[in-house]
Length: 236
Image (cartoon, rainbow, N blue to C red; front, side):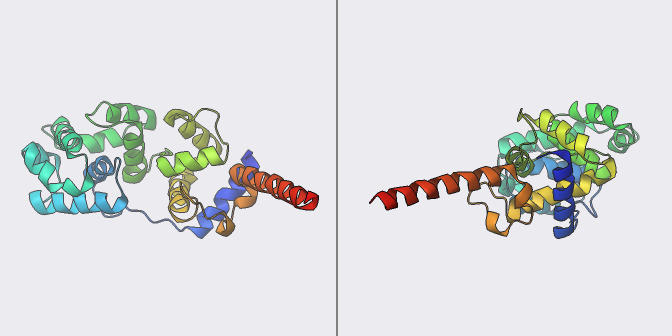
């Protein structure tokens, strides 16, 4: 897929999947905790974990979570899975963000994007994806977070030779206008959940299949197979 095809594809997907901003109504800190909970689990399980955590501790703030025992956090977020990893990360990041003014995360998010990204990634349990999600969703920074759906679709579209996080992110940011990165990030995720699934993708219903490298290769294989079958039937 070249740049022109990518732009055409994304305009179609943006039209098909209106923006659903899951972080609307959340504080930046809640967005950060939600993103940590979302690691290696489903949206439904992440949301259940966040709601149960809120029911357990009340308002989700750095002070409240820093004061909550790790075992209590783990019990509250059980539905989000991997609690032995996520509970210490959540308490650790809460403690790291505590200061006398109480707004360290907001001050980080007010920095230029690259600097803010570095500061976020220095926090416990915050890697590149989590940092990019918080930057984009909580503060409107022009990052393009890459989740499993986006990584899969980028490979199917043959956007990158290397498939590591930073290579995919850089390729998407290079071809996406800054003001479109959040919307296109959400559109690709919606497409991955709806049609371009890891198993049994629904290519016949896909509105962008004509520009999809993976689909074109699949069709070419099917045509070759069909020709072989026809030749074999003719010989018989």
